[in-house]
Image (cartoon, rainbow, N blue to C red):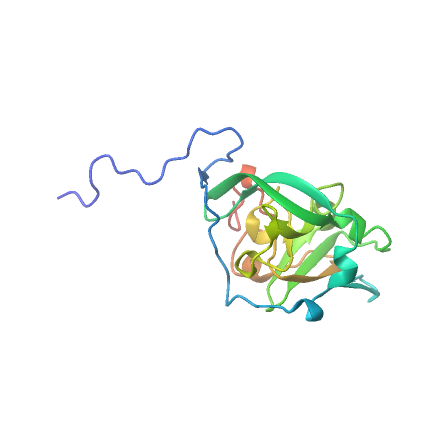
Length: 199
C-alpha cells in the first residue's frame, strides 16, 4: 500500500530568477521567532557597539533615527526555504554606524532584546551589505517582524538578520550565536544552501 500519493513530491522549487536553490517564493511575510515577541518602548530602546577592547558607542532612538538613512529594495531568504523578492525597507547602514568605531576585529556577535544572538563576519556588515532597518514597505516595522528595529543582512539566510536588535559586539574569533550553537551553519549563504553545519 502506498503511503505517499502518486505525484506528491513536496513543494517544488519554482523557476523564478533571483531564487536561490531549494527555496520557494512567498508573497506574504511569514513570522518565525525563537521565543516570545518583545515589545520595546522607544524611550528604552538603544543600540550599542562594543569593540574588542570594551569601548562602547551607543545611540538612543531619537539619535539613531536622526542618522542618515537609506531606502532600499532587496530579496530575503529564510532557512525554512521561503524567499520574498523585492522587499522595501528604510534603515541606517552599518557603514554609517561603524564609521568612527576603531576595531581590528574580524567577527561580530549581534545581540537582541530577549537574548537572541547571531554571529556575522564584520566584512559582511560593511560596504553597503547590511542595515539596521526600522521601516518595512513604508510603515514602521511591526514587533512581529523585529520592530522597532532589526538587523538586515539580506545576502545571508534571514536568521542572521536579527530581530529586535540592540547591540553589536566585535570579536577577534568567530563564535556561534543562538541558532549556530544549535547546529545551524556558521555563515549561512543561501546560494550555497548553507543551512546546517556540514552543508
